[in-house]
Length: 144
Image (cartoon, rainbow, N blue to C red; front, side, top):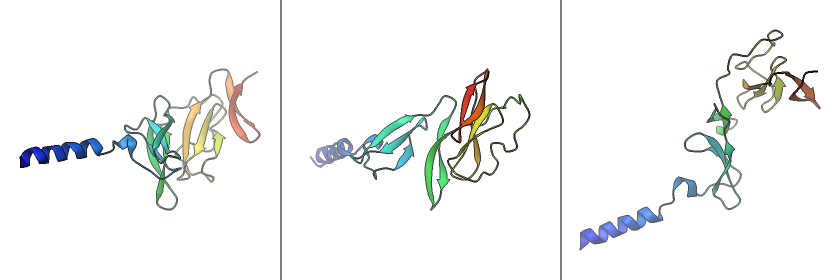
């Protein structure tokens, strides 16, 4: 009888235990999904909700952010960038000044300054396009 009662208690606690997806959380916080294929946000109901998947070839990583906290970013190893018109002055992996700022990486790619003030490669512009600033924001625009 004791064994049956213990087994029922264990089964009830396993059923009642929330899965990682159902964990309560602090509204407005972010985290990587498990596995690290996307980013989640804590919604107004204090439950995790998918913001979106990471692009192909990237994975979610928690990068340090001020005050001993972290923020999830979809990151990848920068591929060899085709040097079509020379090397830019600042490359991915080098220090940058403003976290969250996007810049052209040479004439044909875009990079972003991460939370650690390190430039991260975002992507190459498609063929027949180049990086140009529109209202101080870099875009890949058609080459004429």
